[in-house]
Length: 266
Image: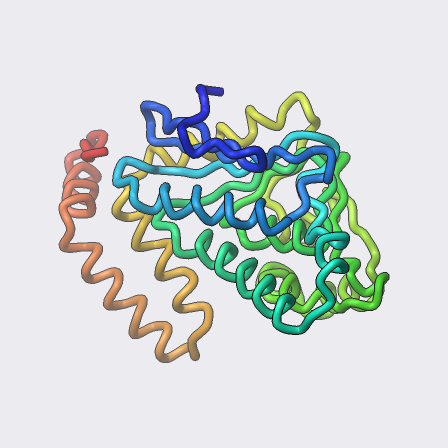
């Protein structure tokens, strides 16, 4: 990896965008299993906002160090302030960070090297794509301490079938990486020594496509998912029409007609 930028914090490393436009974020609190403490949430928010302003950004890879990808909220920190107003503020802060991932104009790939539980599983579900080692496990087990994983349920049920999500939420049971792939939570599962190669394969596939088409496609994907089918078709049709008149699509279609490789601006 390249050297971190000035946005490096004790909790999150934001590595300098490489020449191809790839940003790499690393959760860097292995002693706490990369829990989403207030400091971790703030660091992630800062990093995501910085990337959102980078017009040269193409892809974000979100990884972690240590045994866990992310073990959810920091329960010790939460227990120390047993006040409704504090909890409302904390969960709103977490939701803003999760939505910042969705609102980014570039895809975010979760690089899952270990356990992802509760809000950590939510983080995986919130990312656009996810690659996991075969030894990782996933769960939304807040119910085990009397806390239904309400906010994690939001992206979880948008990734897998409702009854599969509900079983995890109600029982606190964990699933393996292959099960997570079968249920739609992750895209790819591989051995630990192949994790970076699998992530890079997805990164390179995205980099081979024009940034503008990826940007409008990601935005449309999430907008139409929340609509009724008629409104979704209306929005999708308008999006495709606007995409089609853009230079990238005009060049891509002409290249197809000419039987040549398209030439796109970065």
